[in-house]
Structures are given as structure tokens and as C-alpha cells.
Length: 121
Image (cartoon, rainbow, N blue to C red; front, side, top):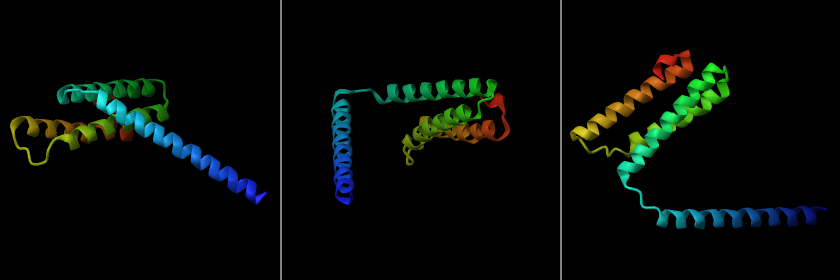
């Protein structure tokens, strides 16, 4: 029975490794084929965060804290990525504005979760 278990474990590990390799190769191929302008990418990410905020608000209305938390977390993760994408050594007007905007959003969003403050959304 131990031999059978070890064989199955190796077999499962091999399948997982193969699936991981397939996924990694697919990601690399898709990365090569996609050429999105950085401004468009920022716009897409910001729109996605807004969609998550709308979904969080709907979840609050439906009294579904799990969905609210899930969507707030996704929005916060996106805004955090946007914030970290602004080069730290940039001090031009646009970079300062974006850092301030993202920082304000990241300061206010936890109030939705902590206090149920819909006005923040």
C-alpha cells in the first residue's frame, strides 16, 4: 500500500508540475502578444478597481460581508499596485498627484470595512 501511495503522489506531483509549466508557457506567450500602452493599462486597472467598489457597495446593500470584503480587498490590491508603480524618485506634478490620489484612496477605503461607511464609496 505504501508503494501505491508513493506512486500516486509522484504521479500527482508530475501532473501539477506539467500543468504549472503549461500555464507558465501560456502566460509567456500571451505576454509576448499583448502590447498595451502603459496609460491604457493604468486606465484599465483603475476601471477594474471602480467595478470592485461598486460590487462592494452592492454587497453592503445585500448585507453580504464576505462579498463586501472580497471586493474591497481586490480594489485595495489594485490601488496598491498602481501606487507602487509610480516611481519613487519622480517628483514631477503628475507623479506627486498620483501618489497623493492613491494614498488618499488607500487611507479612506478601510473605513468602509471598519465602519460600514458607504459615503466613502
